[in-house]
Length: 333
Length: 263
Image (cartoon, rainbow over all chains, first blue to last red; front, top):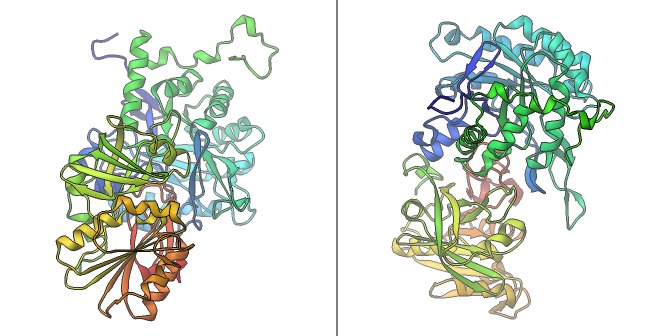
């Protein structure tokens, strides 16, 4: 091991990152942190790449309140993609992107055409084309948005996921990440479809559709009725999905779902993820992401692991004792 | 008059500090926690809040708690044990350490040229000691009235050091029988008065109606479930006449006529 400690560098397509930890879209906002806590709170920038909140074609007010609450070992949210739309997004882009790490634009839409138009407007932006503002490193497609035509999320249908991915692929040479929804029967179907259509990277999981009741009235608590569950409660399911996918696709995986410690991050990498994203843990305080990266470094150092590649996929190696007929995978009890 | 949230761009930024508990006082089920928080104490304005780490194992979002009062390097938080987070916070003892980020949100605008009428209900009284302190320090004329359900809840009064504190309880066990708005009707409140209110939604609606009938302007401090407490997650919005606004950074103090749920 080098005296500088373990080598945490990873590669996502053409992107070379200093370490494997990104933020999950919608959980970390540089403009807000700067305004609240000052520039110093972002130095050094805690994430290896920054993913701002989902941007849509038109401004969206979002869902009626209440929108969030804590649940057992996690939280539920139904914000409804509140954002000011792609044109306003491009106006504040120089502020958003001034973070010293690659910035990946998370895109949502109510129809396939919406996604395509958002990406087209970004690709056509004159300031970006002339290099007057920081570059867009890539796109992450939030395929969990309900489609106005069908009422279903694009990401719940493998063919639709592939069709959308191909349309975006045709719009850009930049990195294309498809963020998979776990609310499907078999996540390998949508994953394969996205990969075949040209996705460079897959990220998973988005939140699990869930319901919380208000105790006194016994009615749904959230204004949107249902919401998305995240936090440590979902980590074992997210791990299983990354673990299942890692042997099925060749593109790199960004693993996420309940990461609150360096060990959590390492577990996703052991399940085959190349990088990880921190979501709900960002709400534990502005120190949380830096702590998680530090803990990951310490975990590797303590285990004498010189580089992340040496541990990636370790959980995929089945021990003889657990046998290959065990379709559900090795037991960890 | 100072415009809403105008300090936001001028005041020193919020900080995130481990803070030692220096005092714990209990009033029935309510707890007043004193924290050594020099950097937050220097920055906090009345009506602002802090996000406090829950001192309990497992995943817990930080809890938004309004600043009850500030003196020297100490901030105080007045807490009612209502759930997992506030329950754990009410168990702290002296010398414990809490993770505290703040101050956050907009404060109450203070204008000493007009008399102030401060109304609180239930645990919503929490931020009003600091507001009264600052209004009095600015030589404003201040009237304070609190409303509680019953004698048990009225024990909150012991957490306050305010001369001439008017109290009402729903059951009449302490002070006047009735609501804080019933009480307001019996006090001498001039037409120039600025109203400040914090409490449960039905109370804030009643205060808005009462103030509206008299042509009084005023401010309410709202409560909401929050995740980040600092503007990122958009989780804590309230419907206003200018669309959804975030309670954590656009509030918690709002012009009372702007909040649609109070109409």
